Length: 408
Image (cartoon, rainbow, N blue to C red; front, side, top):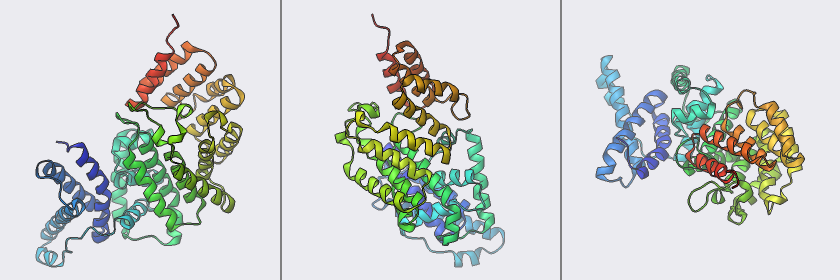
């Protein structure tokens, strides 16, 4: 039985806060997550009929705490210490400071005893609230692999005896790379959902921005933290213009730039300008610089594609990857013409991470359309539509293909 959409969204928002409170008080990540899930299930069953309580987070925390205590007492009874356990059991926690606890939970999930892949998967599950299937799509790996990573990660955290506290400065440095990757993936899943009817899931991108702001306050001099926050702000600023009145996707070239969030753009440009002048350059800063070039162009035709191409070439040397390469090829086409882009796309399409990806077909379709090959573009758009799991992207790609039907 599933809860109504409004209650489901609320539970997803509150889940990491409740889990963080339990882990802060009781320490056992695995048992705390089990107790939190039981509380969420109870809410999903009870709230639609009884109504959402005045303090939903407090309700969930109380129920989850009781479930944890029940489990704790059962374990104590097995060891013939139930009376002592009942006497020592901690009281039900209040809601507590959500923001600080959530950030601490994020850092705990990036414990150095875990592999980076496990750090990211666990944090996306516990803090970002993504399902195992969504995480699998983000990593381009089977769902069973992600489930196994999460299970092993919880076991390792328990075995390590990790405490629920903000790590020291030295420990933070060890975990920062994984933390930034986690926040980046959460934002991307929110900004362009990998599946489902909606193009975006604002609760996820908003949560990623909120957590990254906290991390920036904690590490104000770290260039990559500032770069990631700038990247999120500059990208999210375009969200109001990304969909039309009917919810259909609007590509960058056709967006009404008057609808972009000028305040977010100004904040993002200020952040990236300051950090590029004062910190070693990293991948997130370069991506933010690219986003700034797009956002500062009054019209799509005014975009400085030469500068964007130079930034992507630098990014490709610093942090090569399939999506970086794909975006670089788009920039090549905008500077040197679609035929040049298509030649480079043909050379890159067999690389791991690109072969069979719907974005490769979408880029090919776009470049073929620019080159005047209407039939080739139509076929590529339809191929891309078949390969994406996002219904919003499917509708957009099918609409582009329909516009390219043979002329009568």
